[in-house]
Image (tube, rainbow, N blue to C red; front, side, top):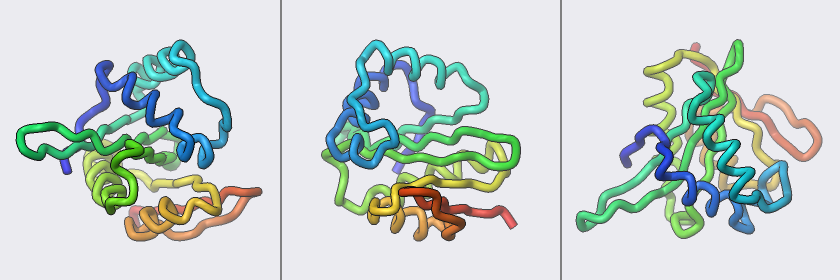
Length: 151
């Protein structure tokens, strides 16, 4: 798995992945996102120094296969982590490797605790974060919070 910073050329892929039915189901915002709205959000996040946004991909037979994205929103005492996979890359065991690789890259940039907010019935995501050394922190409404501490 290779991760790189998200670039402008990834805008459409990330928009399509976000508007996938399963992504919408597990998101806080249950509506489809318009391309115009996504462009504003995407460009704002690319310029924001408090957001680190990585795209994971594999190279197979000289073809690049985009796997998904991991985003780190840096707060004062932690970074909020989220992950979204390309719909065609789900259920292949790739989320763990993507998250592991993105975390390693991020922690070289900023040493901080990590928090993930996951819908309580998103078992695949919960399993992925637990396998990446996150532990259950608390439940608020229909979301569970998981933390990975530095120490």
